[in-house]
Length: 104
Image 1 (cartoon, one colour):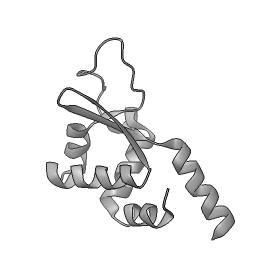
Image 2 (spheres, helix red, strand yellow):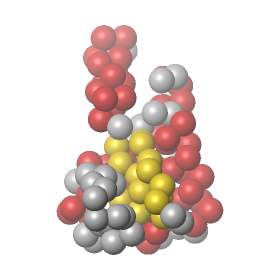
Image 3 (cartoon, one colour):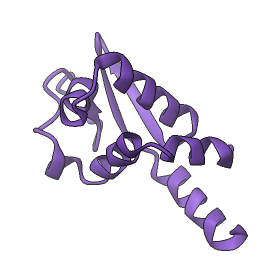
């Protein structure tokens, strides 16, 4: 993880909101998994369309934001057919908070 990429990803209110919403997806998004096979569990994953709707932004903007956050290491994704689900990368977020505690 490049810390400067994390800071860049978090420097936008909508991207920060997305990360906060994904901390408690059941509170901020409708029930997920409608497009996932029955045998697949992607706990905490939220479909891009639901994130887009909550963010009230265009599909291209939300996709760009999610891609940026994933490249920074803050999010993980899984794709099933035409649907992509995102969730927080808790390990990377923990590493970043430790960096903040010890280095800044």
